[in-house]
Length: 412
Image (cartoon, rainbow, N blue to C red; front, side):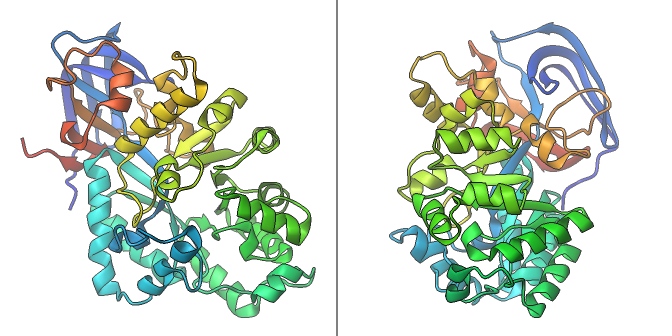
């Protein structure tokens, strides 16, 4: 169980301050209860000579499927459709075999691993209807890692023939409308796998219900060209355009095969996208156009996607994404590593709001990670933020705090 802390402080440390994550040497960084009460700046710093304790905002993993964390590497040798598509996909068949008692320890273990690697909050696309949401909520309460739960119907509301015909009267069947209401009583929002999983009438209905209840909406778009093609064949619109028109999501996940027009549409609609480069690579899919999205000014987040594909380690995701972006920019100068670190920190603000800042300042929540930059591979960094993004490993995490509460502390 995470421990509670009423007061604490670090002296002579480096802190990444504000939404721009500016590194300052601080004589004191202190918190009381759940709030930062001091960040006493001495000077800005980008290099180290003898190391330091470095404090960064707690990380946000903006796309997970923790339900299938009980099936590590179960998708190996399977296609996207064979592994993840409902109802016959490997994931859904195997999840149905688990009891709550056998499933909960896997969720707890993976949430604790996230805390061990600096993550304080994740946005989870939770299968198995209200029961799935309740189980993850229990694991979150035990570990202290915050789970923002976006729930999915346990079974598809529509036969394939209805989905492809897409009749205007095909709203949610009564049983699924009731399930939606039960889900939203437990979860923070809603997300089906793709726009192709529901009719236009159902998407319009779900948007109205979630708007009325103040819940989040998210959707997977453009993970593969097949998502776009099937949506276009059914409705005359690609899946991203259809999502924005009918569903108005707070978060769009993947954008893996997005073209220039789709990137422009995302930015014009002021939507945030969560990218998942390691998962895309693991499935043999194209890699997301990180450079094009950054050039266009998109607000981007990072996620580790399915537990059965990847460990939920954002440190690994940051490293992979930064190097992918540098390759795509192809100029040896871009992007600034801070732009990548923001994808796991301060870029969360437009999506979640409230006390989710992804930044450290006096008066903000004491939600932070302490890194050991006295280690030989870190202590003489020539570019502090680049080293955070590319060189920090789980062994370099000294502590992870959320709202002043220690989720993880290294034994030493």
